[in-house]
Amino acid sequence: MVLRFLVEPRFDPGRESFFHAADEFAYMPINGKRGTVLFFYPAREPSVFSRHKPGLQHLAFMVSTRSVVREVHDWVKGTHGEILHEPQEFPQYPPPYYATFWLDPFGSCWRPCATTTATEPPALHTRR
Image (cartoon, rainbow, N blue to C red; front, side, top):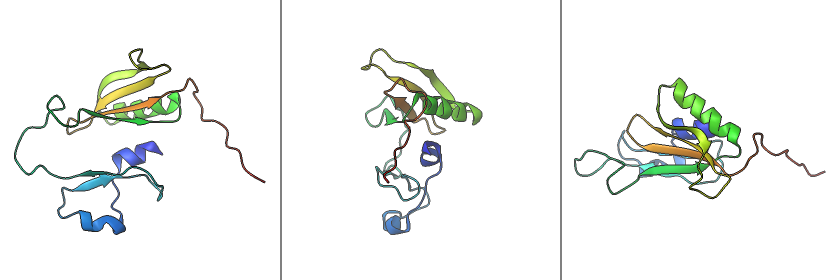
């Protein structure tokens, strides 16, 4: 589930050597799935974070359906996150592009997006 990937950092025993302090962490796919791992380390020099300065402005990630975009949005609202844009189509991106934007407690901007008009995931086909 996407939400667990975002809000529940997991420490992978095979990756512990990357972490040297309690304020270092990573987000990675759940259930041992392959995929992108994001490592976060503290700044070596003191400064105030701003998504409007050079560096990470926001992180977009694909989800399977518009329903998932709305589920993420509802979860963020339920945790009192700061919603920047309600779930909607964004015509400035190639259609169909449906997304929501929010800020986490540290001021980082996140954007789950679906590039489908489907509201439900496609049926899974199994081999016999």
